[in-house]
Image (cartoon, rainbow, N blue to C red; front, side):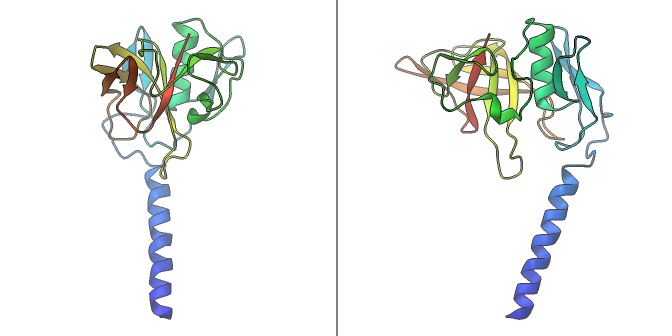
Amino acid sequence: MKKRIILIVAFLALTSVAFYASGQLNLMQKYEIGEEVDSLNGVAVYYNGSVGHVKGRRVTKDGYNLGLKFQCVEFVKRYYYEHLNHKMPDSYGHAKSFFNPNIKDGQINKQRNLTQFSNPSQSKPSVNDLIVYKGTPLNSYGHVSIISKVKDNEIEIIQQNPDPFASSRETFKLINDNGTWRINNNQILGWLRK
């Protein structure tokens, strides 16, 4: 019994170290960290290497905090700042904190000064909406992306720092059920709109 416990503890320790390392290493040598891999409306998407990699904080010339360089939050805030001329009143927080579960569908999220919609919602997602994803066991901070295209039954998103092997673009099925719109992804909490 004692050997079994030691083996289990050793396995858990090695697994924890492996997860930590995978979050810190540049596993995809195709790109250099900080290299532009995509863009939307002239706003660049940069490669971050591993999900947990951090290379300092990006702040605008006027002192507005965009977030940690090459993280998902930094891209969406930079996109909203540069393309939509929008500053969020609360310029801090992890990705999942952009969605406030206490705000009703279609109401203003005062922290972000954006209208918040739940998934599902009475409002169809639109281009430039910010999508918020809940945290997972491997990424407790959640994720954010921007809607780049909307069709009747599908949306395309653009994202920074999804994971070392994922693309900057991804599509999700969009379902209309009697006037209620749902993005078919259980990780998506909702979307925010200027």
